[in-house]
Amino acid sequence: MTELDHRVQGVDHVAFPTFDPAATVRFYRDVLGFPVVHSICAAGWGPEDHPDFIHFFFDIGNDDRIAFFYYFGAGREIGGEPGAKGDVYARFGADVPEFFVRSRHLAIHVEDEEDLLEYRRRLDASDWPVEMQIQHETIESIYTHDPNGYMFEITRAMRPVTPQEDLDANLTIDALIDVVSEPEPTFGKLLARKAELIVERAADWELAQESGR
Image (cartoon, rainbow, N blue to C red; front, top):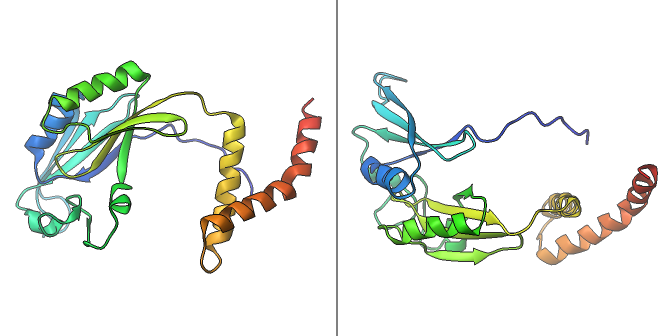
């Protein structure tokens, strides 16, 4: 595959609907300290049955923003049955595993452990205390749900990611694409295919290293 030049410059904004704008503002502005930086008051936009709405944005650093839509007159019934798994927009049946429901989330990066623990302190003193604090391979994260039921993560790097790990990531994804194109994909098949790709590409890697010397 031809490598494409990388032109994007991060996230402008991610956007979600909310049925509780007051609690949403409390969580993001008053608890976490993310300033409100923009809002759009939209009356008469869209087709005739489109409700009036407010679209409001919080600064999450690095010129990135998280935004919410509040639609006037749109009741919670469009978000599914009360108490159903998921958030106000995407509801899941009772038979859907919790790990699948929680996989939909937003993660915001902080610089170090001190910053991570400061946000933990702010959340633990609020109506939305931290639910989990976990160290993964290269990161440490805290998790909670915002007032809309969205899974929310703040994370910090415990060490830099190496070029070798980037290479491993591409091998993993190439192996995954091959495995899921066949019947009954499994984790074991993924590892076996990844091993095959390492053998297939080893000669090319050696040539690349020699030419770079």
